Length: 427
Ligand SMILES: Cc1ncc(COP(=O)(O)O)c(C=O)c1O
Ligand SMILES: Nc1ccccc1C(=O)C[C@H](N)C(=O)O
Image (cartoon, rainbow, N blue to C red):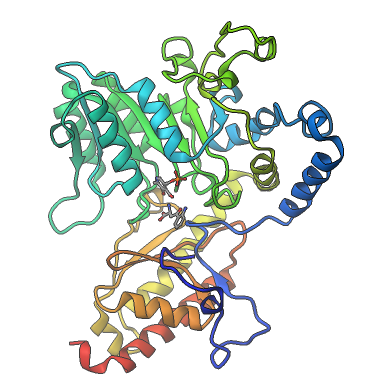
């Protein structure tokens, strides 16, 4: 659950500290979502079908493999606030970012920059730098990095908008996250899109930490393109099939640079003539035939989202995170234990619910890794991003208010255990 390498036995709690009968408290759904019960059932159905029908499985059965991704696209589209033909399920997130930038980043002598966050997720940073280099341009001058103000951790909306207004003439593409992976900040995607378009920029979002976490209206906001992975809040399993969005308005004007047979119209695809009838919009960006296994694990998850609905999930999420915040603030302010002050804890996620999803990020300047180890010994899971940010994500689909209460108690116990062990190293 963390980026560190751990053996499975290390993952289990310390039986001297936990009740072996009790389930752990899982607050790491922002990194990898938990497995929906139906995943196993659906996977077994498809394994069985493969064993019995083999090649006929492409077109036969309840999930015809050749177009099953399209069948589940409609529930995916409603989660991101898109029309069905504005969404494709394909590849992984980083691959989709590349494919979309290939089509949308068309630098000119005057307008050649990509605006991104200074602390963008490394994969996004690498994608952008390499796309710029591909045009024989210099990433140091073409990457316009937005940074928080001195002493602040998150970006102010007004600063983002004024940067777009000031530098917009030179910006080809604005590529921000919807929810920032480290700080948990939710960006105002509607006004960023509006400001970007006013200045003639293309606007895209990486929704890895936003999809299934906050409500999205990509079509209505007029976002040009977006992409996301499905293994975090969407619970499709590690390496699950990723999503891509291209707005309907770009359907005929923006074409994929790389083309494969899956972008070819289904009627033409199997005629085996080298004639391309490119599917307009994002579905024309598909290259290979999709994996039925990835599609059916995502199906199991999307069914739950459709039943629960994003508005209801978000409503619970706002309350759950507010409760977590309240309890964490008591620890930060050391209301009951004076020693806790010594850890100099700081919440870096915005306090305004409109500016965050479910995740809260806590900066632990000292001894963050030992805190995580103590937490796991006590049967609680979340993660740390280097150097010292503890990310805690109460997920409304499967976390309860009781989980939040238990988690914070275990976190407090972990802080106290670390302080006790490290008396000499903490000033
Ligand atoms: C913001 C962001 N971008 C990119 C990635 C990498 O995605 P993938 O490995 O699915 O390509 C992740 C998470 O892994 C992420 O959170
Ligand atoms: N796919 C992974 C494989 C191994 C370790 C982490 C990941 C993550 O997805 C990390 C996540 N993107 C993050 O927000 O840090």
